[in-house]
View 1: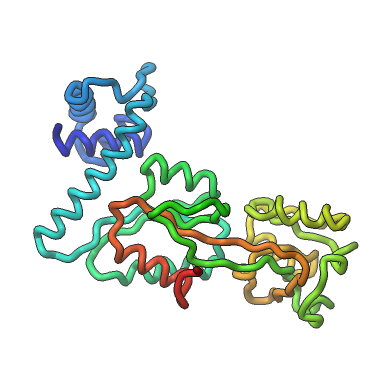
View 2 (view 1 turned 60 degrees about the vertical axis):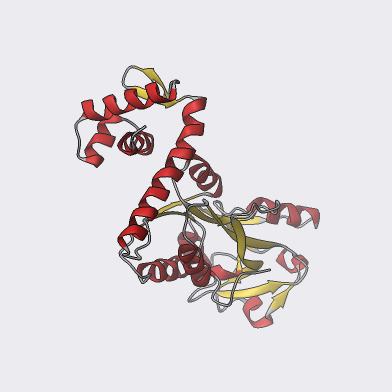
Length: 287
């Protein structure tokens, strides 16, 4: 089994086909196809189901892909250590799309200043997509919402934050500093459609018999906060989304929070984990 054949295999999976994989690796398509064939012969099983030009991983291919990614990462790390460069291997990081922009900027800045010349690539998406990317080996680490299930060994919660009511500075709630759920009756709401906690928040409102008066539905937090700043309505959101021109008002009886966790593959060096944790939770991980 040759390392180059593993690189061909993972490239085909990552880029969706032989043609794109060959382009990214700067080799010919026949070289990639021959490498895949040799790899399958070495393993004694098919890695892909072939339907014309389309390739789909077989169950064996899915299992082997996870191992292949780990093997290649270990090879890259071993090479760096042997050369004595001290450089970190490249990192592919999945990031939850609802993290506030300033947190993402702080994260990117922290990782860019890590020792060595390692590259970091980012994939931004919803929690379910990030989980799939990590399972498939398409990302090496995932910064995403924690669903409350027990964490595996290579994961930890970095941040816990309550849901609050975000309002425009001139809104009467802003002067009050804190409200109760009953105070939300009749308030126009800006619904953050992409929020992972939106369903739980609406369930809490229904349980308290509070009818939501929807003034707007926004597919992005940027749009939702712009509408809140303009006084169109209030919204329920994690505290970290508070920004310029928006006030965070505690909802005393809401009892809803968001936890952000970092999950990583065993091959990711501790230096990357520590840098991500420091950028997201400067005061240290949440217990």
